[in-house]
Length: 575
Image (cartoon, rainbow, N blue to C red; front, side, top):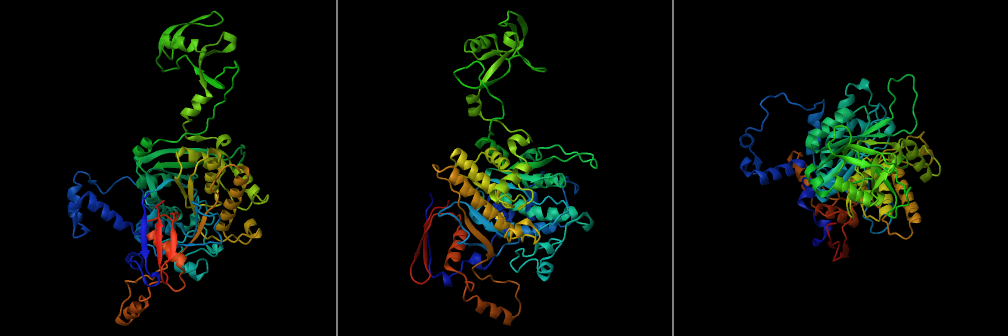
């Protein structure tokens, strides 16, 4: 464990250069630094020399301006959003936090800003990301990006967001309908920078799962090919979200399935570290009371278009079958002697090889691209889970995902103890619930980070009637109650069902504005910067921000001591 000894003497009068100048999240500087390391010949006085870069890439550059990809109105602005640093930080909310020393984190605020704040401390450290973003179905489309169709200034003017960008009146947001002219473009402009920032947080053997429906799955696939690379596309899961069969005479095709796009950060690294396996789905029994336990079987006869070994087998009924079989005759006789060959139809059926359940459990069940609702849950099951948490009310949150689905994705992601799951469209908090439930089931110690926008519940909603102000309130309550239930059901296990609650807010340090002009204005700003800490900033919040800026995780163990007036010594590891 790396040990940090950081003395922040007199934090009230101390400001780090990167906090007071540039903010966090400027991805351009990271790219320049990486290029300087990989290809220093392309640099000139600390800047990229594009002529030299073209020379270095000779033969790799596209000859024609026409190329495969996706473009939309606003894509350039999406890149500007990625480049723009953030002046936000995470402010700990002790009253909303649950459990001491929990390694789980709940963040309330805009997820793009949150992803930027996470960059310094969590870059390349997240094993799995799952998100269930807005599906762009023509309903309320909540986002407050600077370059979105609904401008920040307009939002502040109509009272839908505050100065920090938090949503305070979602009912005033426009509906993203196809009549708007930028139906797909607005959605892509929202998703692109978030997926870009998410990729940088993934470990090299990390994996991301994105739920989506038919409206944008085609666009999302191309965007993710661009951001993650076609070579890192692991598959497209089709999940049957409904257990019943709809019979709508107005529709040519009834929609019963959703999609989950799966990409790795680096497919080769993922395969090398090991892909995850799922719970067994086969039916096992023990009709012959084999002492080795339950088993099922597979044909010993080769299938069509398969090659095998040709020899005769005598059935218990006395019938002789000459055919091609899965293994050599010597192998067959060894299996027969070991009671590993089963004959159906009371000894008159073709031989089948026994596969014991214990063997299948050890090998694991590989995933397919079809998730049926029996093993992976469905919408009705998800609503029932929420109703159980929220005193029988099924309508607190619309269209939650079932815990069973997320538990299977966690297993498929091959998460081990200490690995982190990130969900930055947290919704009702299913991802956190699933991580805790899976830890309880197998004794694991996985962690989660959830980010949820401060979106107001509509006044007429069941959530508002039940006393919930924001969607984040719903998620925190669901996570807290689910944790209590899991703890009660597993009293003999030590499970981390708590979380540290944070709210995205302005930096505790004053930010120098490089755009100020005029001697008088610059002089005023210089005097204002003499006190580098923002008025009202608490010692605890300052310390948390410095922990992040030093590259430490929010959950890093620490010892806080006062040395003089407002001074701290921080000791701890990076995890």
